[in-house]
Length: 523
Ligand code: HEC
Image 1 (cartoon, rainbow, N blue to C red):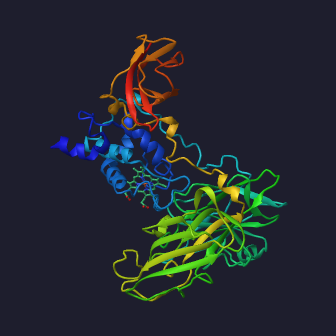
Image 2 (cartoon, rainbow, N blue to C red):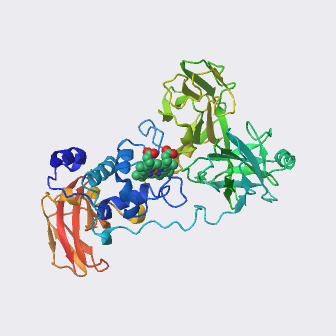
Image 3 (cartoon, helix red, strand yellow):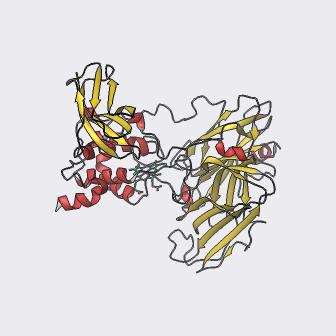
């Protein structure tokens, strides 16, 4: 019975009939440390740590279910519509491997094979920020309502600079729900702050300052944002940094002191960027106003014709609780459609600013399109009203919004050559790779090739290589120790730097499929 079950779950590995149960140490720790531990650690956004076998074991069933359902790691955009920079995704092999591990009893295996757990020395990713500013300590007063509070962070910056990276470090991850970061050149925010005896000031709707400019946003789990090379967001001389923090209802008496770290351009020519809600619920809404009657599911559209050559670098959709889907695309002057983002199951708690893998150039006349669907029926579990009520445009979480922020700059066609992130899959923690994913098991049934001498000392000769491609050398835990291009039928590898042990050499053809293997013994 169990064989049948694991054969189904193992998917691509089913062919290796006696494939042993994956273990935490050889297979799973690498996946979890790479894809989960950044949030699931002491002080992280995930509520329980996953930085050791002992911590993970009690959660094994939840880990299996959350990964099978693709709820974890959280990544709301549909990667098939558009693949975005720094995607948090597991491969099918990794999801299957986790399931096989849990269904096989979640064994630890040999602890010596496990990669060392990730070390988080600081909560900061920008280790040496040019500017770091922290709000005064604030105690959230008792209230049954959402609390949106603005804090002015004095930064004493005497000259015009450009922001190239920013990071929000929430003071209290249990209650900080959403942070918007603005620059204010007008001094109005400081005046509003001075007029309120408590730290900061209440602001229901923006930060109450016309002329303030959004430079960043943060939600739980959000990573720091960096502008593409050569571009920056303006930080005018003597501007204040203003953060608006959303503390949800129930945060009563929680203490918070959130910090913002900025990385600035060292100087030289910087292309000025802006972060603007180009598609909005105002002039660009073509079937507004944004009014959603009770009991109704309704889709709205916005549209904007780009008046100058532009390059877009990031997109940040924003709506509230009734929203169930947000999607945006561009139609170029030649009528080609460029998908931008599709969030098929909108979740108010997971909104972010998503960077494109490469900037996207939009010639004059490109039409940007946005779509958002709102479900104001009792079928929507997030509907704040029971029974449903009329919902209109507004700042409260129980009102609605429809915005697509764009990071953009004056554009040149060659901007599409700038690389932000082209990696298909996050690089693994310390280069560890689950042994089963890399194919030690699949290699078991493949034609052998000859490796000598046995054992090897300073070199290994391989003969009988069947195809042009690449040769990978893996240790018993599946970690790669080298990769060589194969052109002819034989190959000599330098081995003097290799630790003693048993290795598997796998030849992959040009498509990446494994075709041959050899066992290498190193003294
Ligand atoms: C970007 C941050 C982040 C990453 C990365 C992440 N998690 Fe989570 N995880 C959370 C948060 C926050 C919660 C709390 C529930 C929520 O708010 O949705 C959570 C909840 C969970 C839960 C509880 C069950 C549930 O679905 O609510 C499990 C299990 C879980 N995570 C496992 C994982 C695993 C396994 C990985 C890696 C494959 C992972 N998480 C990666 C942030 C993260």
